[in-house]
Length: 251
Image 1 (cartoon, rainbow, N blue to C red):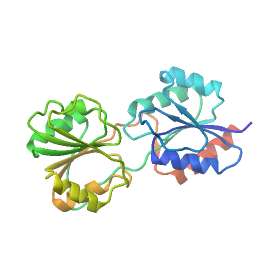
Image 2: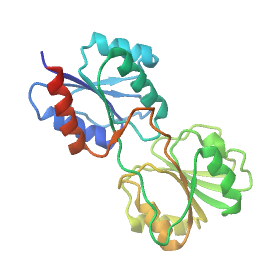
Image 3: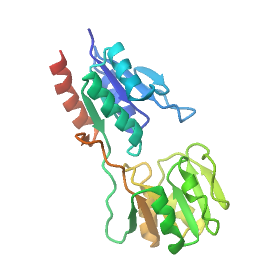
């Protein structure tokens, strides 16, 4: 029987992993998507959309579908999914590998203000400037809704969920973005401060360079910690090598 790998997806890395595994004969691949993006791109292998019903539901699905390994390649801030995956794989006795792109690191000239949460980011903003470029995605913006004196430029792939700050301009766009584009955007909207999550990767990192070049402060929301006993692998080649070891033991 062919080994079955479940990829918890939604990221560029998950797409690359599915393509790499599809090029190998004799492996069944299922990518699970949460369904939050209305038009996800094409994926190699089977695709499943929607939740599993918590860790118990996921554990049951792993057993029923004969899954040999789970790869959590979700967004670094998808803490609930990662926690559920850790609990479910432990219950079903299925190996779990976590794929996480490395986080961003500040360099010379950066004016970063690391914070642990969106609420902490909101609390930091009044002291940093009245015009905010908010690039934390479409969820959780209610943390900023009480900042009635500030003006927000909100960028996300899909329309953000209310409540929103009263003075908000929404820009729907998907990366990657160039430094020149980000610099022009910051200047056009006379942005005083940038807010971002530490998502890592190159698709949206140009805004950090643009903010550094313009001398703007950046509020960086730190990643949630991984579940106890779970470690992350930094890229697809490293994960594939580890996955080969896991599947070899499962045969």
